[in-house]
Amino acid sequence: MGEVVSLSGARIRIDRRGLPSLYPVQNVDLSVGAGDRTALVGESGCGKSLTARLLTGLLPRNAVLEKGSATLLGQFDLRKDFPDEVRGRRVAMIFQDPVSVLDPMAGIGTQIGRALAAAGVGKSDRGRAAVDLLGSLHIPAPDEVARKYPHQLSGGMCQRVAIAMALAPKPDLLIADEPTTSLDVTTEVQVLDLLEEYLDSSGASLILISHDLNVVKRLAGSVTVMYAGQSVEYGPIADILSEPAHPYSRDLVRSSVLNRGESAYSIAGTLPSIEEVTPTCPYRARCSEARSPCSDTVLGQSPSADGFVRCLFPVRTMPGNGGGER
Ligand SMILES: Nc1ncnc2c1ncn2[C@@H]1O[C@H](COP(=O)(O)OP(=O)(O)OP(=O)(O)O)[C@@H](O)[C@H]1O
Ligand code: SF4
Ligand SMILES: [Mg+2]
Image 1 (cartoon, helix red, strand yellow):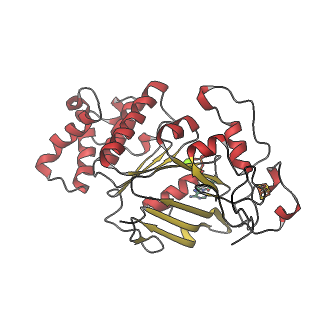
Image 2 (cartoon, helix red, strand yellow):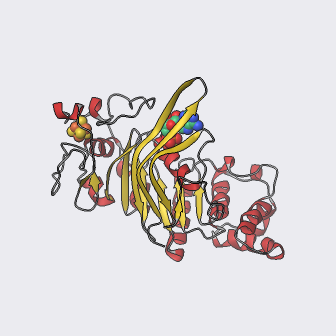
């Protein structure tokens, strides 16, 4: 198959009637191999969900991949129309809010049946297969749950049903966008267990989006840090958490609540406007390491031990780190 996801210099433009276009994703590089479990992290509004939507064919109608290359499953060029045979089948997405995914008017069994139909399961087998799938996700009394409607289930149960629908076609790539944010801690653990079980048994790849670095640490082996629509650092999760190279990664880790402790640190300032593309470093106004070359150097990727960083003065010295555009 080759790489499951390969994004290079991806830029997404959103057009607005009578208003300037927006560039919420400006320069994203992302590479996911078969069986890789990777995460996208970064503060709210930095373009994580839109990047995920690009990969699932769910970009808003007024959004387009304006620049860069994007290849899915080693063969599909996302600059063209999103391939129908991939949508919801080989690539599946789990959203933060399961209620937005579930149809309030249809029973759970019927909804899972639809997902199974997309996966090629015959009509006569779908009812049983839906119950089996619920059972395999450790949902108690799966027969009963299959007969219920979304409003009769708790938020945690709805999320498990949404996960069952995403996993029904046995996708090669699972994208989980804040899958546990709306859940209590006990349900969160159960949902993470389910995802891990599926990944272990299927060998599928994962892109996890989460604000919670504890969740990232639990599921992902590598992480891409995004800032203002750019991928600013990529590397193994252990390196990014213990020795980040990009000043923003360092500040993000400092400001996060790791190991369920308390963080007293917050990054001053706000994200730059997405009304224009920022060719130089977007973190400059907030960066404690900023020096004069940062204001006019167009940044490229510099290699790190097992990844890359986009910064002129990384806080961890990289072998062969040159800084400016390649
Ligand atoms: N359809 C749209 N029209 C206009 N702006 C949009 C649209 N969708 C997203 N945006 C803007 O694009 C930026 C990136 O959005 P995105 O949802 O990708 O952020 P995110 O990193 O997922 O944030 P969060 O962590 O809050 O979920 C935000 O400023 C958002 O307001
Ligand atoms: S390029 Fe300069 S301003 Fe940007 S993150 Fe690196 S040190 Fe900070
Ligand atoms: Mg989001």
